[in-house]
Image (cartoon, rainbow, N blue to C red; front, top):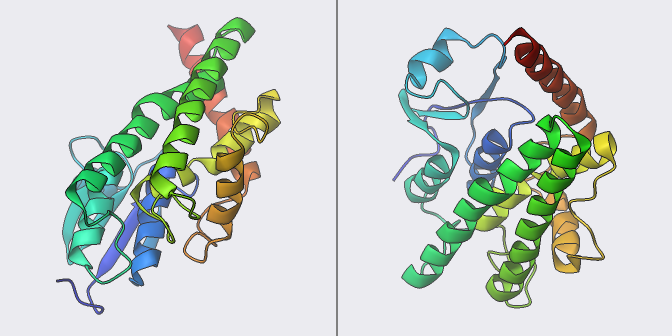
Length: 233
């Protein structure tokens, strides 16, 4: 088991949902860590050496050993700092269900959001928004089943699926501000809308989930770079 005096660093970007979920997981476990902000347009040698395969954030460096890929890191944190609260459920079936829905967030919902941001036409943007809304409808059903009337997917406390989905909330709001697209709609997904308010107010999330305005700023930069690359091609 990891110790409280271990050397822990997180390489991330403040608006990266993948880095955010790692930081909240560490906060849930009460682990002290050094957060190192990366520039996605000028990556540091530390990042490139720590994640030579993907060259992306987040990276958790625990006593000099790097761990990459956000959901892998969250599982590592849960196992290395095994004290309560547990991020993944104890029951094997419930753990499998949690892993399924966390993967669903990354495989279905996140690409839809990215599609809204980078759409070349309004028709394409509308189609990507519909894809995202369909994913959110599935997650609304999943919340009803997983939470069992409690506050979070993980029950009384933030769990694995909460981290996967909740780390994207600032981007959902950013896309609303940028394109007037409501991807988290209280009329369509009331359980998720109420859950989102609880998530951002949770102690472990405070100071980690950024204001959507920061995501809007980066989103505009990413749009401009994508447009420039398309023109150059």
